Image 1 (cartoon, protein in one colour):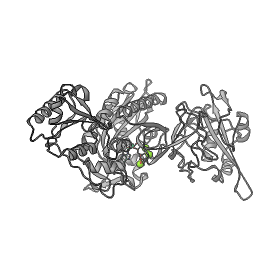
Image 2: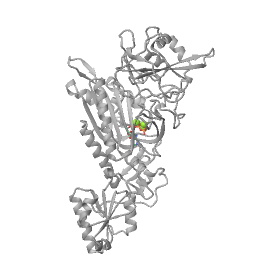
Image 3: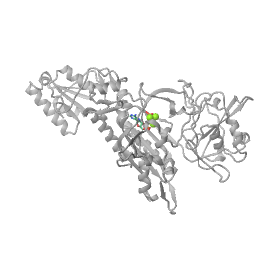
Image 4: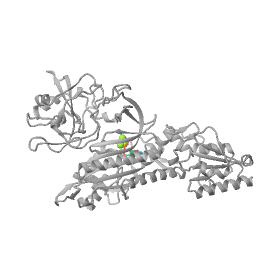
Length: 576
Ligand code: ATP
Ligand code: MG
Ligand code: MG
Ligand code: MG
């Protein structure tokens, strides 16, 4: 590619509305151009990066066995009414009408449409598992679009949806995607962290976010450097503060039936998170005074050990829990609640419940709790689906660096991150609403168990720059740079030797399959170098008469302080 043919449009100053460095640099480097609030043209230089991001995602999704299709941007409202999201979703969902006054949505995500495909196409257990994905334009009417492509209203997302016959199979699909995401973000060359996350508006049972570590990130992550404990602090949103659950005990007394109710019932009544993990269970009770105010709150933490068998329920001491928590034995639980502890279904990742700081319980994920005895325990209780939103919002900002990690493996640290990917184990949330069933071996219809998996393709650009830049501009990780090498001849238009050497190297690198751009614009060296540093191309090769006389070209990595002198014949191998 020659720079004169390509389109390069750099700016000295960033527009005033650009708040963060990635937005500023993308505008200055001519990668994006604003069309409206949160709506951008992807200019040729930026589009090259987007295409590279997409290519890596596509390769890894295909490798993981997912199948690409393409679902429409404009989707009939009927499907969204089937799941109730047409009304529930609020103003972020862009609703439009056609000439016949029929409702449509501009897709913010595609669960409804893909579930519609699945219920028509996946009829038999023999067709499962299946994972469909697409890379498609999304629209979310964000309350506060900002930071350029990081929080756009129109943006590109890769979204994948898995369909399985049961929860264990779906958990495997989830794990496969989780692993694929690790490969994808490793290949991008970004520093990231996978953290436990809230399932939010999408709903579901287990969820992780992939967070690119950056000071300017909108999310805060609590993690333990000594272990794999990591969670988005956002998790705590919507988790009731125990001390404010006035009335819970009365409700419990009214509704819980001694000998009949399970811990799951109790947890629901208390509006408490019953951890999805098979390892633990949190319950709490309030003691009220005559006026109905809370006198005392007790949190009960039960750790299930071994093979998730109720008989193996044991109490255990977790290091680092603060005063106010205590551990109950099964007998105590039975005694206190007049019921047996509930059985937690066989889903869940390896993490134990997170109890973070005094009086605050961080919800790790939604859960499914089944029953171990029919007609005795509740069955199919699905936290987060049938329950109203908790009325009190807690946060865990009272966690400070150095607090003990809930897993007892060290102390907590906090850092900021940018959510670039999000995986959910959905369960049957959508298949139930839309009646997406398949026939099992006995010919009986069964609900498909789903997962969904998103990556913010365009947000990746912003996140990569937040993490990789200096005062001169962007420093693209090699795998997603718009060009790998910029050839910068000094005097291309007046020195026959320089032109010949530059053209020859350009051709050689093209033949070697490299993404190379030859700057033939005739810019002065200072301006030319500044452009490529701003654009963030990883390697620059300077060709000058003086260098050629010495038999050397100057090759400089974007992060390097000085150039290396390399013989022209060896440059190809050097920049590879
Ligand atoms: P956020 O918390 O930042 O609003 P989200 O949780 O609403 O994101 P998801 O529904 O999980 O987003 O969508 C999957 C991915 O799409 C996100 O992980 C993110 O990378 C990307 N994404 C979401 N909203 C935007 C947006 N407004 N602009 C660009 N990318 C976005
Ligand atoms: Mg959002
Ligand atoms: Mg989020
Ligand atoms: Mg998310």
